[in-house]
Length: 122
Length: 105
Image (tube, rainbow over the protein chains, first blue to last red):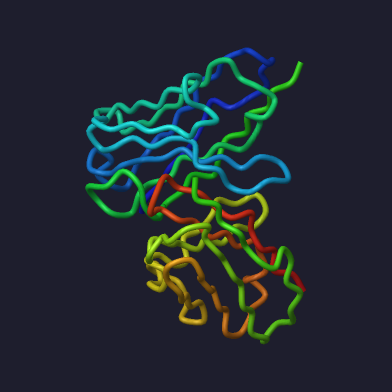
């Protein structure tokens, strides 16, 4: 069974940093592209970032470009999101999600973690 | 950025009734369209991809249709467990989601 578990969320002041992690199990992590998606209070889902299976291609939403960095460690079946210069509008539940189809960086997301909450407040 | 517009914002239905949810893309996304269900405190669940293909384990009462810019998710006979928020997502370009339709009693 595919399992994705996020961690690393918490309360941070504006301008601060957090590093989110996503531990994957139940599938061959190294062959799938992964995404981060967030859900802010009162808003809809927002795609944040994508990384291909071998980390060759990385993409970001304009809203986080230059502040967030996605990475992965296939040996440890882990996905990361380094978030710097956090703003109030970054507050959200952050989900890691798997792209269903192999070999592409974007597509339908067939497995999601339960999410980790990021709160940005002074 | 491709903007996804969902309607209605809220849909009030009774168990056993049919529910029809709409999603419009601001430009042609062909069939690169997915639907997700999300319940409070839970992760989104993939229902439909490729505009009309049910994901693994999704009941047949869920069906998707459309292509280009107009898409529909139909729930043929609502069950109590179907009351949730439904999102459409295009992946023809960098992924964007609609704001969701809340299906409530």
